[in-house]
Structures are given as structure tokens and as C-alpha cells.
Length: 390
Image (cartoon, rainbow, N blue to C red; front, side, top):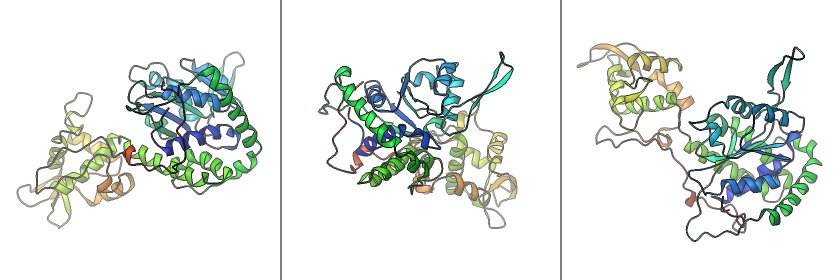
């Protein structure tokens, strides 16, 4: 298949290698292989991952109990889930246990608790296991936040690949898997003690650290390639992430202050609650006009409840004409939340602030994504992985 970038190829290679050293890791990064439509190569990529990863356990439809038992060991297999959209999609039902397993299994020592009626005892089932999921569309945020995300695309006219033959190609790939096991299992102590310098922080660092540690062990140009892949794919994921309603509200409130905020009688930037609600609900690209289960729109009470999560509350504020003394919000009360939860105004994933001196175009909710065509390969002599499309 043709992957979207050289960085994506490196990420898949390093993730596969990391599966062979699972006992060394404190976190088990997920590999999410997603595509907007069928025939983008996601299942074929999962075939290659299955043939090269450590102890693959592939499933399309399995009971949670069976999966728990299969991975509940000190040296678990690599869980591979095809058609993962059937687990997480809108029509999915009854998969809460499996979702919980995939979330909890990202970190070591997060067991599932079950009561055994036959022995009248509490049973702790390990959940830790590296997992790859392939499906159409985005996975839940709780999964993608713990994952290396590969965004597959359908081959364009003129892009050629060689056909994949399972009987012919799998033995060679399994040979690679055995070589990886031999190499990495001999270096588990070094990998367990590794504390590589990371280009990202927090959960992204937890997710990518096993891949970067493997790259540092490999040496050569792999340390640089791993960190470039980490930075590039993390930026793509963050740029394409749809913010939660509360984050979206903070960003839209900032835009409202920029376009409709005024000064109160004490010279402090502020905005009346009625004006803020009007700005929020008249944005045709925002969800506020039809917000809530009833679809009647955001109300002053609900606005206050949402903002209270960030310790932002309304107050009686005295404005000049035409408002007088009304309920409103001071801009200073938002500053801490904006700094902590929102990106800078020129990089917000929900669009640019409109200017009061000219008509305001509808804001975009699609997010800023680095165009794949602009991504420069990290090395020019790397061939594409060769296989057919799914």
C-alpha cells in the first residue's frame, strides 16, 4: 500500500518493533489505522502489521470475556481489531466492556475487576496490551489520544502497488518478526531503563516513548526519524481533533469578546450576557443555536453551567448606554481558562476571529490539518511498503 507520508511509514515500523518488547513498557500505545472510505488500504496494512508484530491476536467480533482471558498474561499478545468502527460507531451496541479494555490497557497495572461466583472471590484481570485498530472514520477521542494515528487514503490515479499474496509474502514477514523478537528481547533491560528525550509532552510522550526508545536502540538515522514522525503525526492529530463543546465554547467566547466586547464603567473589558448569547447563537457554523437535547439553543442558565466548570461566573456589571446595569462577564475571568485549554488565536482549530470592521465569514469547524502534500519526506531513499489495497 501507499502510506500518506514517510513519517507514517516510520511510525508503523517503530510501532511494530515496539510490540516485540512489551514487557519493557509502562504504556502500550495504540495504532489507529483510519480512512474516510472503503478501499484505502487499512485492512491490508493491518495484514502486514499482523505478520510482523509480536504474537498477533486478530479479531473482528469477539466477546469481551474471551479477549480479557487472551491478553491477561504477563507477556500479552498484540491485539488487532479490524472493522473497529463496528465497535465504536453510532450503531454499535453492547461493546462497553471492550471499549473499557482498550482504554484501560494503555497503561500497566490497570486491571479489570470481576467477581467470581464459583470461588466467591474478587478477580483481577490484566488489561495491558498493545493494540491496533482499523476502521472507517475517527475512533473515540479516548482511543486516539492514546494512539499513533495513521490516516490512510485511497490510491490516486497513477499510484501503483504490487499485489499482496498471503502464502507468498507472509513467511518473509514472519521472518522479520522473529528477527525483531530476537533483537529486542535481548535488550529488554536497556529498553525498560530508557528515558529518551521526547519532542512532545504528557500523554503524547507516554504513547510515543516506546517507539522512540526502539529508534534510539537501533541508532543510525532512526532517532531523528522517530522524533520527526512523532512531531509530525502528533501535530496532524491535534490539528484534526474536534474540540469538546466546552473547549469550543471557550474559543467562541474569546471571539465574541474580540468582536462585541465593551468596557464597563470601571474601564474593564466585559460583555453583557445577552450580547454573548446572541454572538454565540447567530454563528451559523457553531452548535449553540440548536444546543441541548431539545434543540432549543444555548440559554443563559446553561451557559453559566458550562463556564462554571472553569470557575467563570457572571456578575451584575454596570455598562454605559445602551446596556446599563445587566448580567455579564468580565474578560479577565476567562484569561486563565483560555491560556490553559485553548491554543493561540491564530491556531485555533475552530477558525479565526472575525473582525468587527468587515463582514464576518462563517467560522470553520474542520480543524487545521497539515496538508499531506506539503509534508516533506524525512528521507528520500525510503521505498513505499509494497502491498495491495484492502
